[in-house]
Picture 1 (cartoon, rainbow, N blue to C red):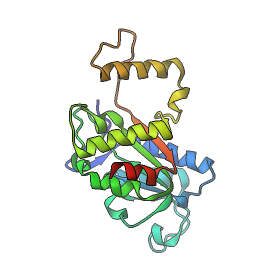
Picture 2: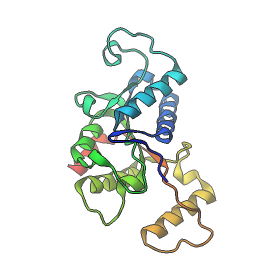
Picture 3: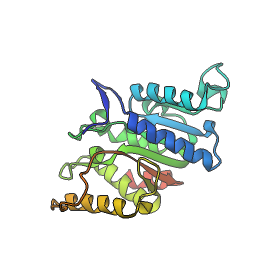
Picture 4: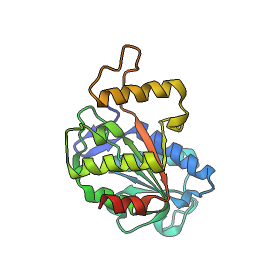
Length: 220
């Protein structure tokens, strides 16, 4: 199963976009303004899609003079990782977009891109990805895959992991426990049993507060 759409370097992912909007709402409830949030997507097609969805949800920016980054409009800045290499904001949401059964992540194999992205938040870093696409197969050992695995472990230990509906994974009850058991069994190449649900790749949100500098020191 694949949730990404597109080809040839132009990818979008509506399910990942749903998770991004969920995170925007979550940070608004924590007292942040829209202008405090920057969304970094891996592909321009996802940037365009996210901007459309944000306008549908929050309306047009209050000011259209200059760029959103310059005029301070109360609207999230949405851009690609490459274009935001010199910026920072209180909250950064990083959307990796890719989700496919072949674990194909294209140019995201360049670890420097993740190093740049995780250095941009001043207070909170949130990551939206299909963890299976980004971290598997387990036998593949590359700098980027190892970084993604380290990122996942670190935020699991020190941050908050959410499911696509915004629920914390330790609050999912029996269904969540069954999914977790199935994933652990698959990690060990074991049969998870006939009652275990079939795993499908889903965007998950890994939210870490005040973690970016610490994590960056781990992956360099």
